[in-house]
Image 1 (cartoon, rainbow, N blue to C red):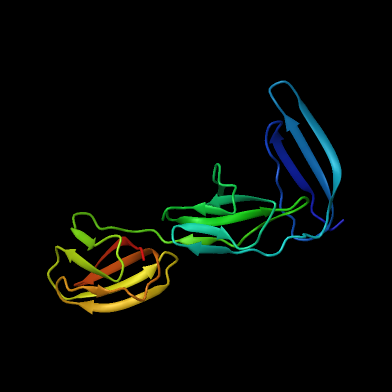
Image 2 (cartoon, rainbow, N blue to C red):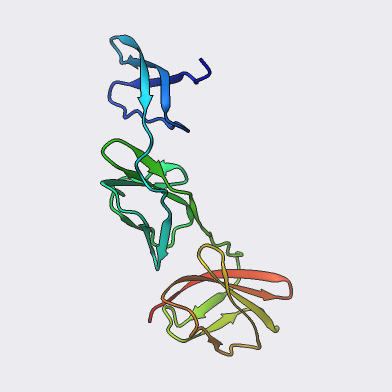
Amino acid sequence: SDDPTVVFSSTTNSKITATFKSAGSYPGKLTITNSKYSKFIQKTVVIKENDLVSNSIILNNLNLFSKEFASAYQWLKNGVPISGATARSYAFNGAAGEYAVITYSSTCNMISPPLVITGIEQLPGENFVVFPNPAKSQINVSSTIEAPSSIRVFDIIGNLKIETQILGNEPIDISCLSSGLYILELDKNNVKLRTKFIVAK
């Protein structure tokens, strides 16, 4: 047969999962072991068409939502299941990483495309402050570098929202931003500093 053989290797207390690219019949081999014995089972696995709709993740402030409804959910961070994260939404609190959600029906499951949350790189020894934080309509930037500054503001998935120039600690208009978490990048004399701030309206 051209179908691949699916080989499972697990302890008796482990949950076994596998991904199949298409429906069909697959020869499966299951080995169950513990400290006392090892048991081998060989059986044909019949995979039916997935009844779940392709899913995506919606970002809302500091929360992630599964676009599609399902009977159960499991959130992943960097490919690893997050303990207790089994609701339709997950509060990631701005933590950087690659997030995905698995949706389940009574017979199938499907993983969403990943959503990458951007991390923050802060250069050591630099005093860089954004205030007020949280903010509503404007922010101020204070740093130890005395020079005209280029300012760029990104959302947490890396989309550029604001790009401007400032002199000193003049305020930056952020009235165009909706509530949520943002990354501010300051560039002075080719020195780039980054920090997070929150818009709360």
